[in-house]
Amino acid sequence: GALNAIAGGWGIGLISELRTGAPYGVLENTNRFNTFAHGQRPNLLGQPERLSNWRDNVKGNTYFDTGLFEAPGAGIIGTSPRNICCGPGLFSFDLSTHKKFALRESLNLELRADFFNLLNRPNFGLPERRRGRADFGTIRGVRGDARTIQLGLRLEF
Image (cartoon, rainbow, N blue to C red; front, side, top):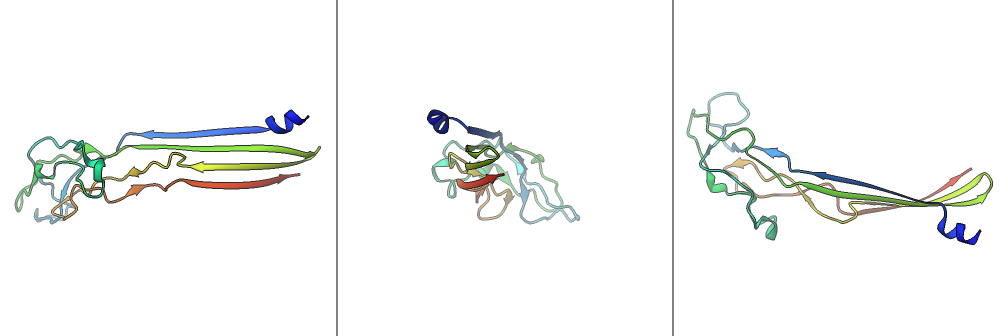
């Protein structure tokens, strides 16, 4: 009886989400293509890859080498493809645990705790993709929230 009251009635759930980064492309901040298109692509001078030190100062360092892009000129399409690279990935763990207490035959009490983003890991968004802006190539924010803890009490009858 006492051992069951302490060790019995527990439940646990874990949800993890692991994703690679979303693809992105680069556009010119000013469209000089003389069409009604959404944006003009710049010329690509090399292979843009994620810089190894971008996490040292996420909001200060650029995510990729912005010097590999140049303005194509008026009326020229540009050589940059639609998707050039992938942004930062997403890594998240959510944990839920609960304990049921039997008060009477048809009366139960459940205490639960839910932890969203358990590890409190920041999941960064995509870098600024418009060449010509001051923040071109830098990451301006995160996706999702910081760790959130939710407690609940439920009476079942």
